[in-house]
Amino acid sequence: MEILRRKLRVSLSGRFIYLKTLFLIFICLVVSIAHAEKGLLFKSNFGTGISIKAPHNFYATGNGAWQEITGFDSETGYSWPVKAFGARFSGVQLITIDPVTSETVGNYIVNEIRKIVGPNGELVNALYQNVKIKGAVGQAGSQSPFLFVRPYTAGDVKNLYMTYWIKYPADLADKLDASVSSGNWRTQFEFKTGGYDGNDGSGDYRIITNIYKHTDGKLYWMTKGDSQANGPIPRITYWLEDNRVVPVPVGEWFKFEVYWNRSSGADGRFCAAVNEREIVKYQGSTMGEYNLPITRIMVNNAYSGGHGPVESYTTGLEIWEVIPAARIGKFCFF
Image 1 (cartoon, rainbow, N blue to C red):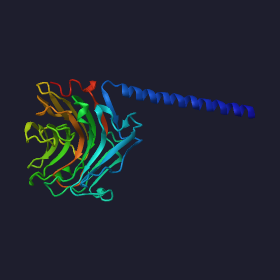
Image 2: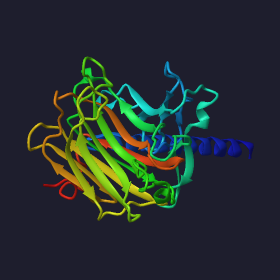
Image 3: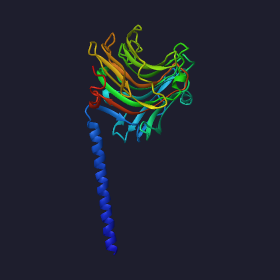
């Protein structure tokens, strides 16, 4: 009888090891297939294994710091920081209206990964951004862009597609004030060029998508290409598109996607969509005066001229070097 028990234990142990091995092989295959998707550069749900560092590298003036996102996302098989397109920083930049220290910065800005009910009703991890103190209405003294920074020496990011889920608080419209100058906007997405005089932070071209509140109380989308990339270029707006048809979702998750092709000719493109409905579809030059490369890609930015706090949740980030096959002919199709 004892011999039979031992044989049974050995048999069960062997089956457990076998099943565990099969499971690990399955996981490896899933990750390999995910990585093999044509054109996919990066994917993250801020899943188990991902964390955001405490604010560090404070500015000499004290008006800000940096927070890197690090770790291996067990849900997607990708690691932070992002290495795609030559990025040297992946995380959140903190810019504060007043000088802060490691002890006081949390009074102004908080960035953390939280568990929340996601787009499909399931619990997900999401990047939570909250700018608490930003100045009076009409003043945008603090901001917290979730961004990728890259050196100008890495060359340009000629083509890129990005999508993610984002959720704004239900009172977003109440926080924007159209009766106050510069009090009626909130930033959604932007990129900036750099490399002027060898400075990554000094550029000649920017594309930005903002949410605005009209005097009638309704929210709408505005996207423009201009020269405001922190460089010495005079203020020039090259193109601008408003969209008052596609709603600005508040208090609920929505899918945001963006694509660009950089060119100084007619084949330049910039498109963005909300819940698969285009809010901008621009064709033409997407270059600045000096043809400088993109050095800062701001996935989204807790940045507003309205009332604080400025909050959002982000999850389900995907970055592609091309428009995914499922969206070809449906998005940014001319």
